[in-house]
Length: 278
Image (cartoon, rainbow, N blue to C red; front, side, top):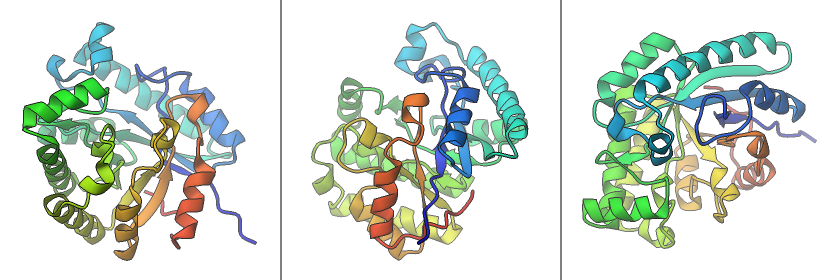
């Protein structure tokens, strides 16, 4: 009987290069090896473009865009070193997770050209230049600022569509992250104005033959299903979209976390578990 390999298309944030993560990148790589991952995508966050778009914890720590750029350069250098050092034990992709705030259309191509990552994860953490995933308080403020939770969802999926069309990221990160602090998301996703955007975005992902990150971090934080929600996951599979697990690890405690649960869900729906590499 075939045993499904565990991989992560979106993971490896470390305390060495990410303010809200823990542990060193090399320790994290060593644990992926110990857990017998054949390959892993290390997808550190890109640096902020301006002071205004720093995360609250980054501001509190006195970090600057200049420091984050310097640290990101250090990340890419270290990830390439580890990629070479452990090449006989694991295939490491030195990748990056992008943002979609004002100016990203020029800034992200600049970063890609400067750092030459193996691939990018296309994520959306900002709507109208306001973060929504840091805390419930931040989420509620952004909901209020954009005129309600339905407009928030619509603007999120519109920004995601724009980003996918422009950058064609190899991996689309946590597709429905916008649900993070919405207890009524299962009903919300079915609203016609939201569902038509989901269908449109999935169609584009299918046409471009991109990978969707089956992001397991939500389980670690207490949600009852990963990002992608079941209804969207079933739609994606019908379109033949490649779905690949991502542990979105932020330290040793979350390397491979909930991978058995995630793989079991995918296998139960007939997902191809000969994981597509980015």
